[in-house]
Length: 617
Image 1 (cartoon, helix red, strand yellow):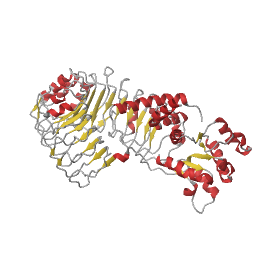
Image 2 (tube, one colour):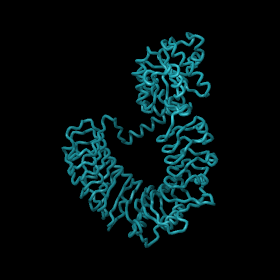
Image 3 (cartoon, rainbow, N blue to C red):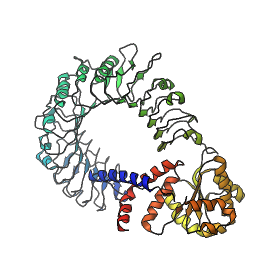
Image 4 (cartoon, rainbow, N blue to C red):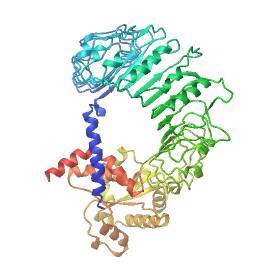
């Protein structure tokens, strides 16, 4: 096989470091066999016969009012536990003492009248107690022992009071993310917690600021002395709020905030326009308005004309808003704005006239696009990610040229054919999503990832090893004994199978060389590869075949074997895992550079084994 070790080793090192960080951060990595989902099973209690090695358990949407220490006592390996929407009213303090490895606990959307004591969970990182029926945010002293807690969600429809010391038990926790949800009758909200939660980085607030504009100003002011750089505000204003003071004026002074999001809020078009003007004059890097409801009190509605050059904003998310773009004037996006999302705004094909050549990421999902303006896209030389899902696009044009594009999403459109020439202008493409399109299988769209050519004497290996491994990886294979059409000539079946397959995989052995049918399949596949000018042939060497032992009719095969452009079936078990990862990746793409990257990604989980094997040899 070709020597790709310099590139692979670099990629593998990068992926290995990423994987190590993921494990070190405490993320639960759980095999399917240790995951149990019993949600919506009419349960009235935690089943007593659960396997002791259960690591993931979901019993949501059942009728369980009390959680005792007996319920989870035998699950010492439990890492993630979800129990939402169960009508839970009480939790005994000892309920989790048998689960010392628990890292994620979700008890949201229940009927808890007080925040329960949580004991015996030294590794707990994520805790969600939101959308329950308690009236204050007061935490018990047992929360002092949650020394690994990095994220907590609190509050609900009846929560009306946040006292000065309510969150004090978290003072020594490494808390980085905090979500607070208050009811409509909020009476008191002390912001002192921003001072003693020293490691806090992200704050999410679901609070009605309509009648409490001073509270909003206080929060913005207090945030300036903290390390919080991310603020998400949900339901900022209720419908038809008569704002007594212009809250948006305070948005110019957001202190150290770098990422600000408004979600599921009501706003007039004039308030939004003023908020946008104020925010783009702030030091924000990311600004998001998601799924907001607007009342049009200005003739033009919500219209974006420009973002000033002095703004520092790099990311703008305006998803699912009734945004309009000007008809006779192009939107002026500053060069430092690199990521834009306009998803969920029905802007149509005209939006291509308002794109910036400086964008790195562009989300145009569900924007009523029917065709791609390739002339406008040609100017986007730096674009790396393009999302065009849920539109009415009928084809991927052959003259599409985006030299830096690495990720393309075209799912849920009206595309029925994908042609190879449409991808030639995308040399760096790594990921393509074309799912949920009305594809028609013809000569331009392959029905199979690969047609497998092999000798009958190698059928056992092909069925038990090759077919099993590749189809588990969701590859669609064509096998003559299973997929040839009964009643048709064998030659016609071979021709149709090769032409309707993206690749042809030849399982080479001495038996293959001696098979007349295999010879014909190789002959036809070679000529097809020459005709379409694409490398559509893959060779798997099942046993050693010296190139000089082949006759002249195998001249092309002799060339491939001499050049070592094949995969050899290894004897050692660890190397077989690498073999499957390589073959799977090669069947997923034709571009060689993409093949190598995909190989690295597919074998990321093998890095540890490969490294250990190398050290022992």
